Image 1 (cartoon, rainbow, N blue to C red):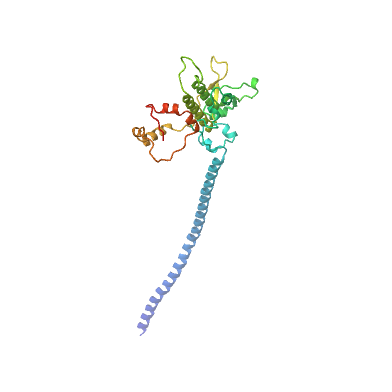
Image 2: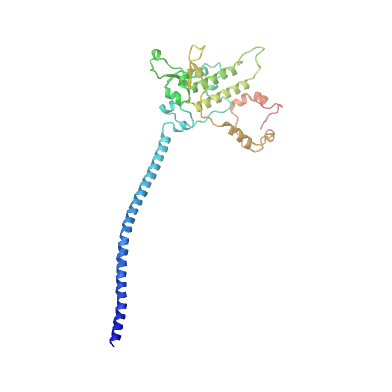
Length: 314
């Protein structure tokens, strides 16, 4: 009996000790787990806070960058003559003077009409000659060294206004607006085109009135285009040997359109020419009235446009 009691006592002790040990172990493990988790939780909080600051900083940077880019684009768009600057080479006038764009309908009619542009005036018209002559005053303008460089020119080759004569300081170079040079060239062609107008003689070509009407149209159209696209670019002047006065450097830098693209487009999209030259007005189409001047020159017009002598009556 004592042995059995001893055996049960040992058995109980063996079962009780492991039970107590497991309880302690669980308690210890829980305490250990809590101890182990205390540091990672703290670290995770720090990591989250660090990530939050990084994300916030990145958002601020990206947002600030977007605002900066938008502001730069807006300022670029709203700056003086923004559209002209985008399609022109550097010119100080685009920084100093507002040049608004105006929607203008050019007078492309072949005929003079009741109120023709002054640029179509014949060479015996004092009013027309005076209007053209007003563009012949290509007045030199003082430019700075920085402006010369911005134009793509070498200041070392550009004539300077000497200060002892002009009193403009030591940073004054000779320049002029190229626009007036362009009009001058057109005026020279205008005078040459009308060389034989209203003249007689054996060597004078026998041109009829419609010829001069055509010349007037071409000159007037070119002038209207020049005025419409008034160029703000500058010429510069050089001192050249055997020249007493500053000589204009008429080789100027421009922002040019690629006209080859227009040729390619025309060739790719143009209709069949052989069909076009045989094409005549179909019946029943909507017709515009001819200007009054056309009736005045109708005979000459038909003679010039229909080599076989045929005319269109309808």
